[in-house]
Image (cartoon, rainbow, N blue to C red; front, side, top):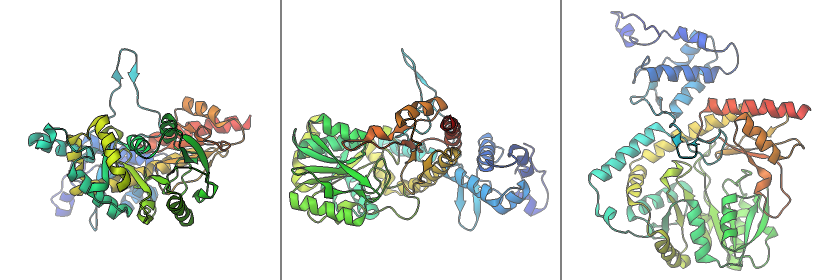
Length: 479
């Protein structure tokens, strides 16, 4: 793209090496989808070096006037650039191209003897977005520990995890989630799934009855059933799971109160208090899975139920897989004292201790403020992806979509026919990865719907996949 000529005027010198912004006009559609088009072109120019690192982008109002588009479209495009690390906003100064521009590209498929390993379809649950800035910082932190390795890397450590990381996690949970914990009660796990398994084996026995939200998180259901436990479903409504339908003799209940999986509702205060009363009165355990509470788009994260419990009956679980990346394989559990010794012994016999190298880098990420900065970017990124997915799905009038104000997935309601399991295949053919809501039922009659993720994929990729699916399902609904 041609660049402005140099001028002796000092104000003009500031704009030296800036593109002729008016030349962006031809790349913008006449109407609709202007934000994605502007974002893609600006990103392309940044990656190509046509807009150098550190350059100031024009004020959104000025650029909107030059491009004859709305200021909102420009602001949204800038926010997408900021979310992906291509730009930074400086209070009172404007928006600037990042000093270190992301250069990460999608990884090429890994060839195996059988086939190429491919990335999952847009919309698939459990995918994280690679944040170039965070990955660069994490690489630096890992190198720091490799350059001067401490003695903890050369012997088998504490099965609970290194004390430095447990201190950092405890401080984060107390401040951000209102959790009652100290360094001793924290156990670093290889993710929520290991945490659930350790809790089952330390607090329950085969044949015990466990209550679980209905519909539920399938991997949790599999863990309970695989350990020989008897499951009873607790129906979920707009206030969350209702312990009023508790079955006699249940030893534990598994809930996701901050953001119920998969329906996305938040458990009301009266339901939380009733659940805590049940645990206190019966001696049962509450397993609170707080899997994606960091992603709240309106207001601060909700306080954890564990912080409301003064009887020590809530076992709290969390993970770094959603907010960072699953390959890190680090999560945490806050274990009440009566279970701690047994659980730590089980951990020691299964995989000894967490990986100390990753622990060290993650602890630094938390203590030095990088994690908080990453969270701010990740929320903006997730919100942009959510909006793009909703916009694509809205093209099908037969779908009903409640826009979630937190989390990394949404639920789309379907017409009466076909079944959600049949629609999963229609979506796959359109290039959108979805899960059938009915498959997540436990004991109550299954509900129909689609569970669709919006983490781990660029907004324009999600929008296009959702648009293709919406066209297909809308056409089907007319036949």
